[in-house]
Length: 110
Image 1 (cartoon, rainbow, N blue to C red):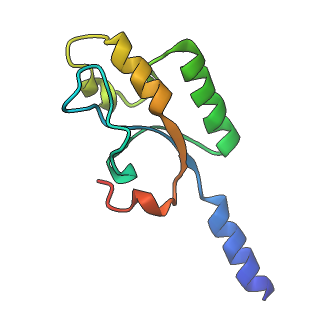
Image 2: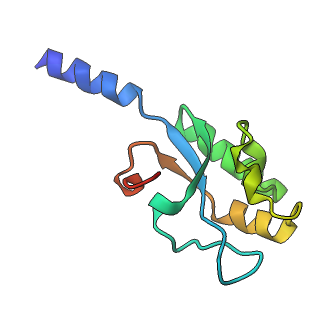
């Protein structure tokens, strides 16, 4: 029994958190599709704890800052179509959320 518990504990130690934002709306300019399945949302940054993710999210929302500003890889710069879009950035921040990396709703993510 102790062996099973230690393996389970080790597996839990590898779980992280994603700060994710919904995809941009294809129908409404300067908006996001917050109803899209979570598997279509975009992972912006990773965190080791829920608290760290929630703090980063709160800071984004308080500053009305576009979540793609947290992208340290540069991969999300493709989402800037023609420069900054403050309304879209606010919509991304307001609708963003923290999701556990092993959340079953992320299945099917590319």
